[in-house]
Length: 198
Image (cartoon, rainbow, N blue to C red; front, side):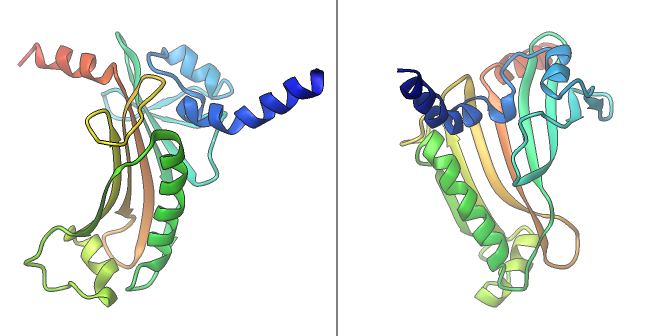
């Protein structure tokens, strides 16, 4: 009986890691996020809700982490940023990194709305050998979005929105980052509170 329980726990472990992104949950206070970061205090950026964190439950794909923590509503957004992905003008390394990780997120949140195309058709750089250049210049997009209003998406654990995308790491060259954003359902409360002063 004990072996059966252990097998069930081990089988569910990968699911539980994704169930609350990086071991963080909606509404966590600054102190609770600190505890979830092995006691390392989040470092505030600017004078807003953004903090640099290093969660205890890190994912090997991502090197840098940001958390949005509101005084009243707690944690409402998390971002993971990969290390630089060096590629060539065809961008295959960046595309492979994206699709490899997209399938893993899809296993948790269902089918995304996928964008893998030129979004600026007037851009002169449209060939396969100009993939990296057109993405760096904002004429191309490679992204996946999961949300309640997207057919096939299965949102859970207070996560209302997930976005995975490739972004330029620099203003020049062919280095990109893979970025994942998780937004919790309390993000609307934060936004509504901010809008009250407008």
